[in-house]
Image (cartoon, rainbow, N blue to C red):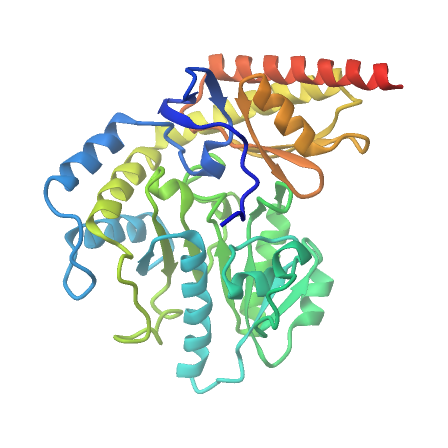
Length: 393
């Protein structure tokens, strides 16, 4: 179906932070498949884990115990707030599981009227009917009505509006700690702490979407750790599979108390191949030295981008983000996707976002050399665009 606006490039192989197209041209990958290939392309640990599992067993379904699920769930619960995990094939499936879990929690407590969730304007949770009903963005919902009820939207960062939206029917607050598609907007520590306090005050569940910002992207295993708060429910995906389709919904035992046998399921979710890759990916990314290096490289890239923005004020206005989840807001006279296209022509991949932002989501394995190369390409692209604008003027 013609639902994608694809660039006319076919990639044939990848290695580390680079992709190679069918004509042999090399590209510096600062898109990472939209924050997915966090260990870069063809990481030897992931290749070995997948190959070993592929020679053993691919699929049995969840009618039986799956050893890999038990190992990865044990690792995730040991590293996080969670007591229990449900595995999915994608981020939006993990998000949908979280929504169902929240509704079932209150239904099981004899409060079926508590079924509404306060969501954030500009957030992106996926493309299912439920997820677009929460987003309410015109580009995603037009033509797909009627939408599902149950989501009350408030502005990002506005605690007064959030409090005013809470009613006796409210069950939870759902937020991305860093809006990805919404423009790389990071919640402040104070805002995150206030969300936890408000949820506790009103007896609500706090539901974090860390599909894009989680699993090492910010230099912590999960972005909410910077604020020292924990959710009751969290959905993750993208980086946890390193490129293999994998998502997970994590929850406390209390929050998930309504989820018993028969209430939810998935044929493919948590299959042995995904579990092998997920465990290998998590074991690498969760190492303290690895996360510390993400912080170091993130600060270095952020500082270099600040300098680049200062050199090209006609093209770029601001650097946003945390760790290696960074964004460049373009000047008002510049269209972000024009810059994305120009960067691609110069051999660097990036991703657009709302608020005229370019997302820079490199593999978490980058070092000084890749940062220098990225900033050089950005500098040259900005200079080219500035010269072109002057010619037109």
